[in-house]
Length: 443
Image 1: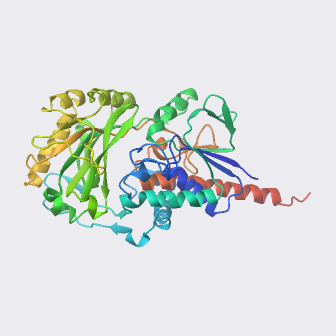
Image 2: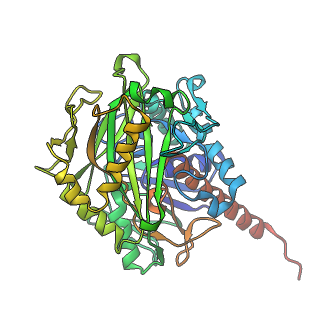
């Protein structure tokens, strides 16, 4: 039986799902709809939409451990999760113009100088390289197009009828589906929330994840970078329901990047491999996870709005000025002279970020006041829909699968693995249908 599969969002999850289907000779139609552009037309500054989504346009690091980026192993078990990770990493190598340059760092010991103040999460990371992401995207896109995948670009899905299996595109167009894979990414979180409310989907509320993007000269952190290139410092305040971690560390040629979601500015980071871009800076998020907040999605959006001046986010430093992007333009931020504006918006939680920075100054004594923060960095986590663990389908609609950010994945590897997992389930189901149809029944 040929099936019509429609995928909402051309991010890492759906691209890996489509790749799995094409590799296995799937005979149905595969259509991917995205608000952004294909990799040949997608500009560097369009971070949130387009082929490979935000994940495939970032810093090119693929985490290789199930404790990072979401709870994949709770769906499929530890062994299967690692197998899915391998498939995602193999795809990035497969379409890489120089696959021999993809390297894995695997630190094994936590240094003693960290222990009095922080925990240090050590796990393997595959380094693809930011500089190669555009070429990977082009090669990957060409493969899927040649494999029969249809892409509909610069198009917004306005509604989905789960009952009649219809996707509404714009004001008048509609498209039928047999299987739907919903991988809208960060830019579609509002849409996912609307659908959850419209169909009264059972959901699991997620904690708030909000903080700052920290930037300083790399020399202050070199002692730790030599141990763990993509280091993860963390702190927990169990009695307060708060934990903090450094997140997405970028070194050598590291640049702060602006993200715009719901019309508000937030910050992320990336790094270039090309020596021409070297600036000897390091940046990373200091991200808080806060539990126990009523309506966490709405709360975090309200805080972000308070951290905007003249339509952009904030920058604070005791000594430094805002840096420039890899394109040579100043990072869009309003510099504030005091932490009061930031603390007022994030209270009482900014106290934890400030303590994190103060303790870093003790661990890295040369750091002192040679740092700056871009505010806010936020990971919007909408309530996670309850799904069938065997195929990530909604419990109420077994042919609608949620993947990526829509299912609270927080990383390239986890998102790609979720998409691959769904594709495998679809292929297995198709196989069972064929066997059933061809079976001779004795009377």
